[in-house]
Image (tube, rainbow, N blue to C red; front, side, top):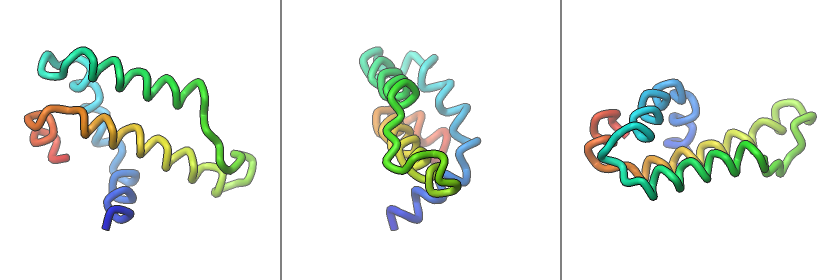
Length: 89
């Protein structure tokens, strides 16, 4: 069930862009959670943990998608309930 939820999350990623914007600009989200979210994103961007090298066509992208999904999932967990309800997460 969790894998299906992650797949749905990946397919509908574009829906999360407004959530991410509000996550970082909302006064409802505590500063330390915004900092943690920023650190998670920056860590992924600057130190991409490639379990499978990107030059191996489709499989090289899979690990990037999994890690990006993990980071976004963590940010959703850090968000207040009102923000989750607004975006139906």
